[in-house]
Image (tube, rainbow, N blue to C red; front, side, top):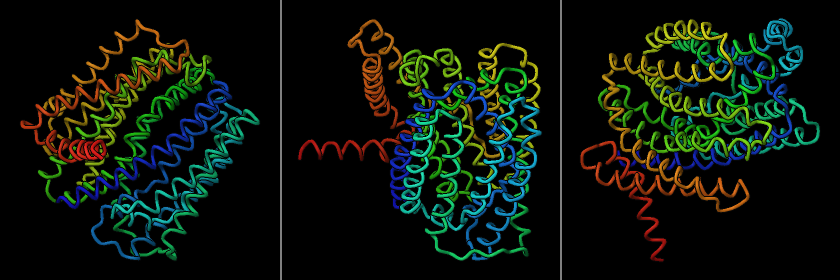
Length: 493
């Protein structure tokens, strides 16, 4: 067990480092794009990705999840997964190309037609990716995958930045995405060096799993993107761009910190699918680890939004501050939903998950349509409230399946909430002092100071809480104590 934990920890650290690099490039890209593109440009991009996202959901047949979840993976399984994935992506690419004009007319964004035609090529690139790389994911072997991510992200981000600086056009994002998908597909084939062949027989087992993943994805997409469809239909293209920019900017921190850990969580939790008590214990521990990292970011980012948005992205985005705050708070619920919905798949409860997604999507649709006449800012805050309503429903469903307790979860988060509150108190007191006339310097000081306060108060609380909580004892022994020991040795040397 200790060996598995250490392997998971090493994989998490590797993915975290790669993700930091990747997200650093993404952050630089979005900053440059925000300073070189208009709200209208962001609106065009939002419209294109709304349509492409829907078709991508139709093409996602869950082959990767199936292979990771399967105990023994044969050559036939890999070829069957590649066949299903490629054929579905090819069909979707053709549909996107053919329906691009209709979609542009419906959303009243003429420029979107050509954008979608070009985007359809990227869908084919994704279909060409080798599913054999999931063998490395399943074994927590992220060495070559990390190198592939670094190379593809570096080249694609550089491409986007250069085009944005030279031409100030939304095509910078479209072309950069194509470059990323193409290079990643080529790299996946190079890493595994496995000849893939079409397999049209005996795919029934995968399809029995995939059909529910597909249906769940379609329903779930409604909750992910229907709000943007409403914005595109009833608001201006510039307002859609403002809404999309705030949304993209708010998830940067989540993708920077949480996404790499989530990539490890799914395959690492798969070893406990036959013991629900053990799986529940690991889910609680995962929630504590993730929340201890992300909750202070939500608190601090929301509080400092008035400084972060204009200083980082430019004064032209000041009107996006309330939207940024609402979406940043919403990302916390999204993080928890991401972890908990994976539990459905791990337990093989994809059918029940589909019913959950279907019911909550109907509720979501009704509420979103009902609030479509409010102003953009009220719409964003209602969207945030809906996200937490969906989270509560998910807790209720999983409580019936595996006794996941909302009360225990809130209790486990109390020390983290207290530490985050201490951080906010210090930040509020620091607002009366101006150390530098440079806004970015003051912002950096506030961030570093808040982080130190949070870390100090969290360490103190964990020390006193760990004797009474297995989850915090796990957090201390697995993450904090090794770091403290390493720091002590470095100081002594």
